[in-house]
Length: 248
Image 1 (tube, rainbow, N blue to C red):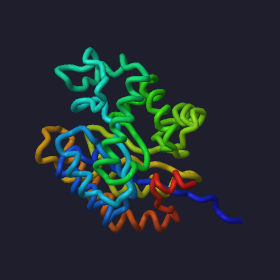
Image 2: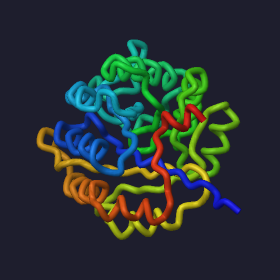
Image 3: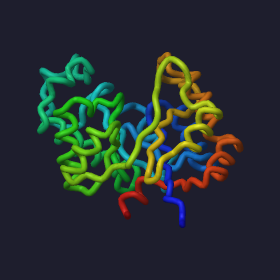
Image 4: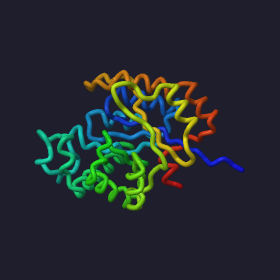
């Protein structure tokens, strides 16, 4: 009997956040195990990241917590000094989210020179019901997969006609999450189906002030290591992208 297929999308978040982060992500895509990335399109370094990643499988990292909106109709009352404010996201109506998602998708296609492969959300703000609803409307209309963080979100997206993966793994916090050992252990234990592994590789930011810096360097070392590629081979796991998921 043939063993059930195990496919893995290794997605690097935050392309376009900072030049050094983008350079690390593209290195990991071209020479490591990262098979997908998502682009932030409303920041000063978005165009740089998109240029580096031209021709690679890149989706939209929908950003509602940093920088300014791209939709001309975004309510000023839900901004702070003209910029997104994360504490106000819970007040966003679904239709406002949908308009902003459409505007950011259009910018992503303009910057990348190709349609985005899928959508996920910076800081997982689609845990907010109206954000998930608004994004789901746009994604379903355009046939774009969306990141599902748990079974409830996965079921809701699929009811709305939105593709997503069967499983999700990954975290971001005070310490780097993806060490070589954790990557190898996770890959070995993957369930059948398609899993998204979220990661945040990159060189430490050089233009953007943030405490999330050395964590990126550790993850970059992990996803570009020979040990991680060997772990995939030994586990019999196939690397794919969201473009492959959309094609079925």
